[in-house]
Image (spheres, rainbow, N blue to C red):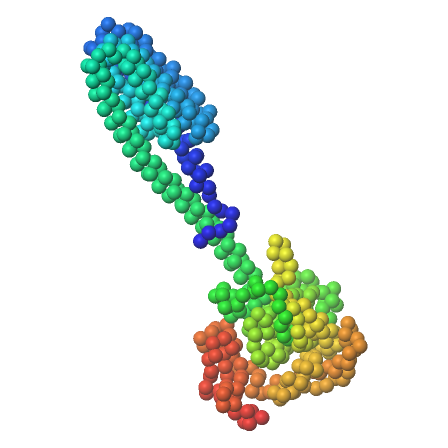
Length: 484
């Protein structure tokens, strides 16, 4: 997997590798090879040309300053090209004393040319020269030799000796070239392996960051969506990144009655404890019904149903959740009397309609999955009109619920702030049909986080059904006529 912005330059890596290898090879040659070999071959001078032993010793000692200069200067070179120029010059300077010795020896066919082959093998084989620098370095080593011996040759025997030596010289160059060829292939393979490893590490780091960001995002979404929805997002069955879209939703707003007065009169620790308990109760019930938490407004909770996962009975679910919240808070009466110093009373407003739903905000700073549209402020306005523990709904929801035999009652036409100019008949949700109310067994045995609810099957029979996997509790089936 490739990620934008993390490509590593193969050419740049290869250049840095070549520069480092030239430095390493010259360091080994200058420190450990050239000086010992040059001085060791002085023993050959004593045996074969004793008359030149002191001049040749002086020539061989020149290798010391050449090697010291090489060790000092190669560290300064910053590009492969300049390093190759210096390496070629170094090889030519190492070969120069040998060529001078060949010029001093009267015999044109002297075997001292073998010293040039050693220089060639040490330089041309191991220093990563380009082809052009390979040729230039070979000329720097051998051109003076041929200039000297050809100028000294006088007869056929001399030319035969030069030709014989040339066979060995060409052989040495060919061997150096083959070593260089295979060495270059190994070097390229090693560079590519390093490049692949660095790319893999870079991609893995990007992958880890991406997965971490995704995990953090999913963790943050778990405060808005039910576990079933978060799992669907994780599995790719729900895509939240498609942008803002138009959707039918059912908005619900739950607000605490008289919270300001309680906050002023009670200890802050008690207030925090009560609000945490209240929020946990409401959010848990909402998420159980796959209702998306939109935002917290003071001590109120605004949420909406039917997005990102859509259901045909999203209005009924919202209303069932509202009634369950009211029941749960009433069942927790003792806790609130002890800490809230009075009964916990709420107002609930529910409104349905179209809204724009999706992520709003800047990803760099803050992004929230939210809905913008009339149902949300309308639900909030209904909450302001509600009496303590009253659930108010709009007329469209009332018509939908009455068709399914929910108990609703009209409280008349009301003026809704922000929606003046339209007639708004407001209804109170009193009770759900007996078959729609929560039973003792309200969780699916296969989906622990999914609630069982009553629905009708293909035969028109009410069945207790799982909202997530479709599991049906057969022995709880009842007919609509019997439920009526």
